[in-house]
Length: 252
Picture 1: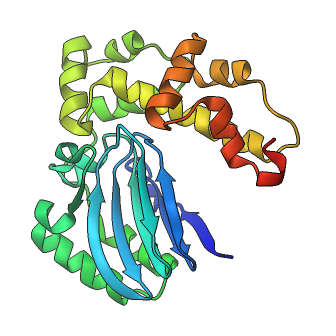
Picture 2 (picture 1 turned 180 degrees about the horizontal axis):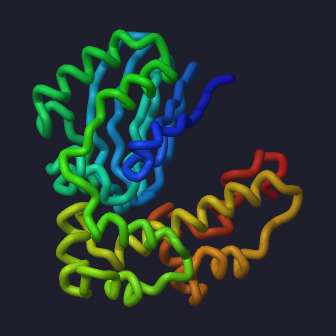
């Protein structure tokens, strides 16, 4: 297989903060590989043919990242839940739409983590290492507990702002401080992410899905917003995005 991808769940004590550890390996070049906005920030440990290259933080993205992956590249990632990277790296919200050397954000821990990951024999060992190494700097706040509700497609932002110790202005301020974007924009990215996941699931089936049903299930109540988000976050329409997920022989 030219490209492989997998995910490993974090230790229970980190599950509130980390969605998963993930790894991708490219045996052959992958030109114009596309990474879509998902509301998350990721630590990325990159190797080329087994040699460590970099340890970086990819901040929350508001536009798709398209890059050429060289043959022999392997990436191990720590995918933080939305706004949770700041519990470990206070500078993470400043990295929106940027990939920053982790050494610039936390010099000593970054050097130690890079050294340890460089000696780990594979993704499972890297995940176990991160389970031991990663420690949140701050306890979970009422904002972080409320933020997990944003993943529900049926929850209006007004309900989120009415959670204890929050209000509309305080929510906006905290969301920008911890994620780098406001709550409305973050909710928009997460809604788009739900739609992408449903289209991926539908692509494994024999029939073309109902895009209206997918839009509704993702939390969209207006077809124009559904299409606009795909144009913004995927540089495509929902139909064309779905077609790109199907084998070439089935796309027409």
